[in-house]
Structure formats: C-alpha cells, structure tokens
Length: 338
Image (cartoon, rainbow, N blue to C red; front, side, top):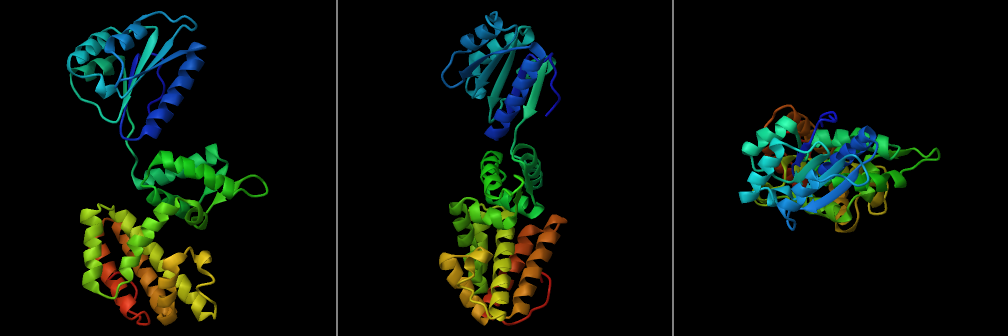
C-alpha cells in the first residue's frame, strides 16, 4: 500500500479481497481526516446508482467539511460502456474538493487508467500467497489483539482458511480471547487453532486425510488425482493435510506404546469421532518407529516443495507411502519421501 498522498483525487482499490479493499479504505479515510481536519463521506453502489449522481457529488461543494470522500462500490458495474467516457472526462479535470474512491474485484483497463494515474493511484487488493498471509496473521494478532501467534499456528490458520484475510481476522479475534493468559496477553498455538477454527473446515480436512489410510496404492493415487484435478485443492493444502495426518498417527502410536488409551486421549492429539477410531485402529498395529518415519517423510517432502521441488510428484510419492503404511504399519521404510 503506497503512503498517503493528499494530492490524490481518484483512488482505485481492485482485487478479490474485500477485506483488503475495506481495510485500506479505512486507512485512507483516517489519513484524509487527519490531513483535512474533517471529512464528508458519501457511498454509492455501482450496481444501482447513476454515473451522474456519483460525479455530481464529486463536483459539488461540501456542506460540513472542506473535503469529500466519495466511495463507489462495485465500480466495474458502473464504469463501463457510455459511462466510461463520463469518468474519463471527470478524471481529466477532477474536483479539488473531493477524492473519488472506486472499489471492485476487477477492473477493465483502458484510456481511463492513464487519467487516473495522473491524478491518483491504483492499489492492488488481491488475496496474498500463504507465506504473506501467515506473516500478516502474526503482525495483525500482535497489533490488534494483543496476541502472539506461533509460526506453525499462522501456517495452519492460513491453510485452513485459504489465506482469506477476512475470515482469518475473525478467527484471530476468537483465538485471542480463547488463549488469553493471566497478563491479558494471548498465545495462539497450533493446538488452539485446531481446537477452535471452523469445525466444518476441520471435518473437510479429515475427509481429505482419511482416504490416504487406505492400504491400496492405486486407490490412494486416484484420490489424490481427484483432489488435485477435480476438487482443485491446492497442493499446499493437501501437503498440510498429510503432515497433520502423520503427526496424529505418530502421536497415537506413542500413546499406545506407553500403555495409554488412544481413544481416551483423542482430544489431546486433535482427533475425535470416526477419525479417532480409524487412527486408533492403525495405532493398535503400528510401531512408533514406522509412524515416526512416515512423519519425517512428510516433513522432508514439505521442505523439498518449498525449495522448488515438484509438489505433485512429492505428493504422489507420499500417497503411495501412506498406502504402504496402512497395509503394514509396523514396517519401517526409512526416512525421506522416496
């Protein structure tokens, strides 16, 4: 986001993230209020208003403040066809007493763009990639919710919510309240995220995970291809699901090896319902060493994919490994995604 410039007369927020469009508009409004000492704000919807109404508001004098902020939502629905020429004429000589802010998921490029760039700015509001979304979550929680988010928790939250900043912000507020300590400062851990974030989404992850505990390599590979090609699941989401599944299996085998009751300890490892019974039955037959090697293979594949490895090929290798593990969970195959 570029630094605020009082000379801006037209600002376009374009991109799929409604949260970013709203958040950046709020920052702009606050900066304008500080600069102008007050502000009149008018909001229009491009799906229902007339272009003349918007532009007349920009050109008319404010009654309460010296400067106006005129917001046009769903701008692409209005700034098109014959209306586009009206906006071109306005942007060629914009009013000094108003800043026109146009917002939308998309934007149709054309001659209007150069006119806007001469008197204002375009600001991209696309959904960030997962690493940037995770970094955003850490910074947002610290600044807004007095909470510390661990790196792993931020990564899990980002994957669960597909880097949707609006949903992430809502969940961060909930997690900060749930994880608040005696001093009022919250710590958001992976376990807290798994416990509180979006039960429906968590169930979706179990559906993804459960199919990989089938002792049939061909069936597991068909499931993987369905997830990637038909369901269009991102490879990072499937990789996370496998990492999490291997972690749960390893934790369950350790509990079993120490004489504990896996079914009674399901909540402590983030498993319940039908998922708990499936993993408990695997743990009854698995060796801790084999489960540990499976988990290490997932970590190794995850690391390779982040260093430029082919994520689909790595997932295929892991899928076969999971099937072999499900068929013989006591067999140690050796570390690595081979």
